[in-house]
Image 1 (tube, chains in turn blue, purple):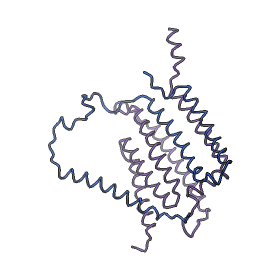
Image 2 (cartoon, helix red, strand yellow; image 1 turned 135 degrees about the vertical axis):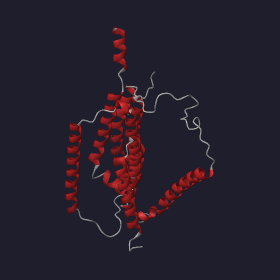
Image 3 (cartoon, chains in turn red, green; image 1 turned 60 degrees about the vertical axis):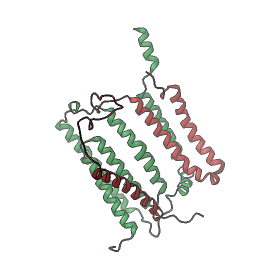
Image 4 (cartoon, each protein chain N blue to C red; image 1 turned 120 degrees about the horizontal axis):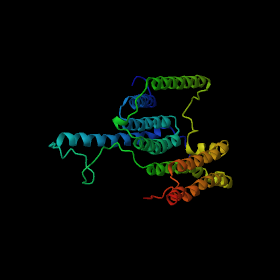
Length: 124
Length: 179
């Protein structure tokens, strides 16, 4: 079953990318050329849920979002390491289970720390 | 077509796009546009990984770098105050120091490339080492120790991020009571 894989096996994916990109570009260009253009000041205003916008977009915002994002990335990397394990699961056997569980337990310590610090709690 | 195989054509196109987008990262004035061009650069590099038959690395590159890390970059840019009036004055000394640091980095990169000449280039068919299965076998035997150390690195990053980003609510409560 495991025949040699070559980069050319990915040509269908490249074609899919080209078709997807081409569709977006064609639709945008077509709607730009075919659609009527009546521009008024109110139409071109930036729209935010019907509320009149105030200030500008370059506002520093809360670090809580960043904290959630960085915690996501860290556990994302943890999951990435599980793919090679899952593919080799049967061959590695019990040894692989111990290896990966050591890895996960070390990260669970961090997870526990995160929960005890209530890092994901959205106060205020 | 010019005696080139389809792989060589793809390599040429991807390299051209990667370098072009990388230059756009540097030359755009808007930092948000810079990050978006960096995402495109990462996609081109993922294409190079696929040409090297390193499928796992290619997918991880798109999911982690282009997906997650670039979102972090955008967050950092938006965390900063980027109003033109709040822009710090770029002193001449700052510029010289930046130039020196950039030059040293370039020197290190060129030096690192010198060592690559000694690498033996494997000919004859695409290498199979980058496939998920082969990669897993090496990762869980030969490179087991670095793999486990990686978890400690992730743990340190997690604790550090929470330490810096999270305001300690307990001490704040005490302060309010003391006042």
